[in-house]
Length: 451
Image (cartoon, rainbow, N blue to C red; front, side, top):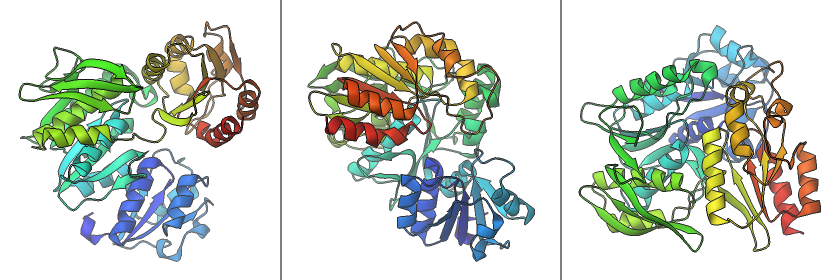
């Protein structure tokens, strides 16, 4: 389907962060945009305020008249997270509508554009957001489809006037193989989504296929140490081609120098904490410099990048209490997040509230999760958020808790967490997870601010 021939778009699962970005894109272009999602959220309410009609009833009868019968100018976009027995999804299938996954639509949009695609089992949202921000802030410009709400723009989609597009390339169910980028980044290839891939070797093979999708004159950037050939390496390491050097903490900010064979930028200040975010920024700088953007403008853009919602986001920071929220839901992400917290606040007691995401991920990485979670000072563990999965026998939060060596640990519900925060007023609290743990952010924030 050609982009110019699309007049109406329906999103099945419009509340997803990637899906909502596409919905906003088509609405901005003037197409009729509607959607379905199971639950009303702050994001879907914002889409409704922007003029997008959304139904929360999974019935064909709830569809707008424009989407009851198939027309050649109509596109239906769906997410694999939607159950196969969804009545709305099956309505579109049986009526013969043109159905595309989010990644396929990104392929349609980016076709003919200069595409910068950022992939990785973690780090891709922050990295793609930094790349897009640098291009915007320096005046180079771009359109961008991001997997999070950027704090600078309060949106997950950015609109540009040139031919450059930045996309977050999702490895889930091999979605990123629909893209043919001019610039590709692979941030990480840790084992994940084993419910799809079976084992790490098949995941790695998928990333190799993604790298092979690069256009003939394109550039591939890979984190140092990844098993991908012909890439430009980057890291906080002297052996990488693009390097972060002299990393230090100054005034609760991370400061570093950037170097490659042709460039050197001193004393770059970054609001985002952690070595992993310094490395994410390093590859973004490398891309910007390769595009010919002035180094001083790049340095300034990095310094005013405010981050992405739910990526090490400060919710409360009033001197007596610090509350940080993060999307981390994989052991490596948790470790990077915990390390950043400890670097910034080495003398404070760390209270962690963690919601495991998916039964299969909890089962597959139970030992790794337990090892990281055991490094907290206090742990409040929520029940597993199932997302698209049915329960697995014997796999629950008690299964995980039993493996955690930390003595101050417990399983609890979200209401208990809010009350516990009110009663104990922890000095440093971190909520982490990719499920619906975000529903307790505001209650915890209000509790701490009114303490």
